Length: 616
Image 1 (tube, rainbow, N blue to C red):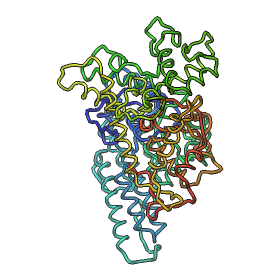
Image 2: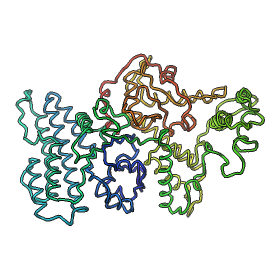
Image 3: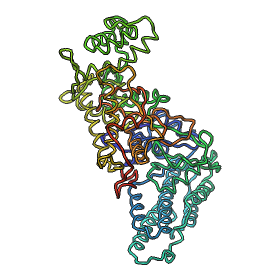
Image 4: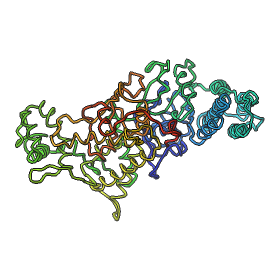
């Protein structure tokens, strides 16, 4: 996770230089875990802060970061980070070339290797420049740099160039253009004999062999008292060619003590399924989404991030809860002397009033031995297992159901204020710092119209901004072109339709006529039913943060979706008026069989192989 405070509402660290990312970086415990002396796989959906954290490991970012933490990290960090992005633009060029070179499978693969290798070498020489500038300027000399450059020209099979690292970097980038030019020429050729293609020798370079020799040369020419390792930080690996993903999975067992691997990728990286590397022995995992084991860490980080945002907007010396209030889902009167769920408390009053018009709630309370007209008990176990349990559902049914003349029906609230307060806002953001920054910025802007300063943000403003955020997120999901399944009527089903079916299934059970004591709110991807096409769609949903894995086991390297328990992103819960809590689980097949009957697997021609980078 980890985040920066951005002036741009659509902030994306991918488009920013490390020094720009560092200017307003807010660290967290996950970032510190990433700085360890070990191999790490960083898992998270889009917007979870993976790129921000990876860029903050670099020498340039740490030396720009105006924070005492940066000074300490610079002195104790056991490695120098080489940030290697999976650049979408050149990756699209690779994909295009591969499509056009289908009749040349060997060349197509070699082209991919060559372009990836050049991208890695470009990142490496950039890192070497930064190390000399920020870390080793005291031992730098013109002769030393010339010696290093001469070796790099030899190792990387570059044409003669000025012996400066800047010139080496330009030569690598020119080589990239040369490689694309060769690919274009072959694509336009009419030959069908692949063996006749004569490629330059640099097409056959091995990226890791070049890294090893080049880093050894650097460490030899620029000797250091405290020799640091090199951390190869591959970002957004889900967008990289499959051969690179598989190769890096094997390198997690690397025994070369000079190198560490820090890999960032999607929540369910299939390439790790068959790795021989052992989780917790060879590498560690950091999961950048809230679940049972780390939810408290996300709350702490969100509070620090929002506090920094408030300060930036001139709202000084105020805690987030002072400005945003508390959520109705937490203890309603914790600052009061009144004991929760005791007679006269806010919780007691809400449940009592609901029981007056909801006969099914009255019957439920009576069956549990609690008087509906005085819903309290001295038994603390009963308070927790009954009253505390039903409170979220009571609040929602009060908000979204109406009663008249003994009849109960639903009602629509365009901007329900029940989703408000710091706890609800943090939950709705699901650990996504990019979303949290935009929501808070928009709330402050909306509340400040015509005013010099604000003291609090009204719940109506919070509701308006949250609804806008939810609509924008739905528009994103609907814009994804992935269509994989067909129902019994032959109609194509989009990813959003699948998500909507799950949401409506949960909604129906919250707002049924009878008050639900054990409502469902999570689903298990049942392995004996789920078609591969649905699993693929769910993987896409997890990548975009639309569904959240709620019970990952940090000690188990299992990256399959089947058998796992999920919930909808809480930003989507608002659309179907669901509580911001897990609730019980149900099989996915039960969620879909009535609203989205599936009779066969089906893939739309031309979209079946749609990859993650095409969903950006």
